[in-house]
Amino acid sequence: MRLVKSAEEVAAIEAVLAAPRFGAAQMLSVEFLAAPDFVAAVLPPPLQPLQVQRMRAMVGRWQSNCVGDFAGGTVYVACVHDGVEGEYNLAQYMDGEAATIFGREVFGEPKKIARSTLRRRGDLMRGTIERRGVALITLEAELRRELGPFEATRESYNVKSRPAADGRGLEEDAILTRAHYEISARVALEGEGRVDFGGSVHDPLDEIPVAEVLRAAYFEGDLRATVAVAATIPAAAFAPYHHGRNDDWSALATAVDG
Image (tube, rainbow, N blue to C red; front, side, top):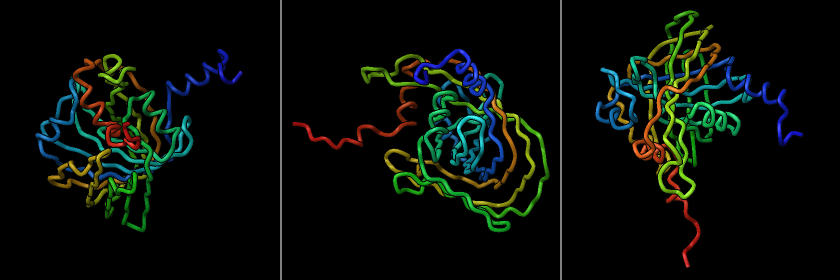
């Protein structure tokens, strides 16, 4: 019965949930510095900013063992928690339902569905994220330096939260998760780039202040992830961040009272 899974089916599903893999990755990133007051404002407790207020915008595409092929992009904020440095996913966009639901439900990623493009012509690359007719992220890069294959790890912070059933506050305390990535790169390029942000009432990325672009980078390879709970956040403390990560429901009214 497909509506209620058997023990064997549950075990197969949970094996994938516990060890997601994202292969044949192609990821273009532009790293930049932002204003310290902005970084401090968007990082929820207990995450803390680094001494250098570094951010990163990324557009990419992947294959997987859990959500099929997908594409999308993310805006990250460098941070630290309990002595472990990583990146907080400030905004994230995917081009399909499976990757969006999986990321939100398992990792706590703030994913929304959007249109993603990634194109390369020689040393030049361009990546875009578009949602509701607005170009939210535009990356352009000239990648002339080959870095060669490498192995690395990365930590990514996200928060799992849900609104209360009566619409007032959150249902329970939010959960800070930390995803640990094992990265195997076959191709790594570096160069100069630029990033432009657009915005709307639902996705105000145009508020991100780009003080200085540091570099552009391109990666091809595979990623393996494991995710664990890092902390809990009091519901009242996280509610402003929760609503900032989602669409503004008050701006979507189409019914007329009365």
